[in-house]
Every structure is written in structure tokens, then in C-alpha cells.
Image (spheres, rainbow, N blue to C red):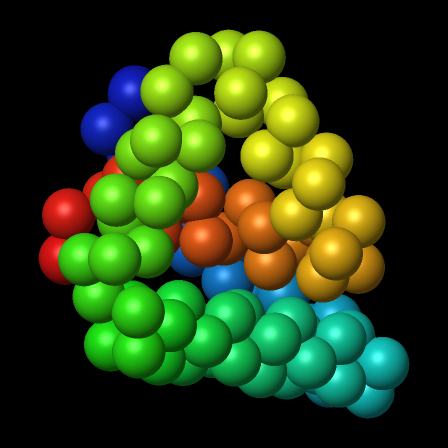
Length: 99
């Protein structure tokens, strides 16, 4: 088999294996559906916070994370206040990536 046919057959084999596992066990399908719903919710949260806070949040995060030490303190403090390291990470990443 040459490389081109392997590159073509490998994704097809992966899709077939996933399809079979979804058919054989409903748990996989529920797991993937839950993960998709979670990721969709995180995306909606990011967009909502971006619209709500706008440039003020970006300025606050830029000042609060100007140095690595300030970034560490902001991350620890934000996680303690919000009780969600995922949300703090999402806010930081969302502010650093252009819309």
C-alpha cells in the first residue's frame, strides 16, 4: 500500500469504527452528545461575555496578565472567586484571540 491510499483509508476506517461503536453501545453516543453540548455551551458563554464586557474586559485582562507573575495571581484569584478554572481559562483565551 502506498502512502496516499493509507491517508485515504485511515480516516474511513476511523469513521467506520466510531459508527460501529455508537451502534454497539449507546453510551458512546451519549458521551459524544454530552461533549458536543458542553463545547457549544462554552462557545455561547464566550460570545456572551465578549458582547457583555467588550473592550473593558480586554483592557482589564491585558493589565492583569501583563507579566507571568501577574497572570499567575490573576488566574489563582479568579479561580478562587469564580470557583471555575475552566471559566477563567476561557475568559483569558477569549480576550487574547481576536474576534
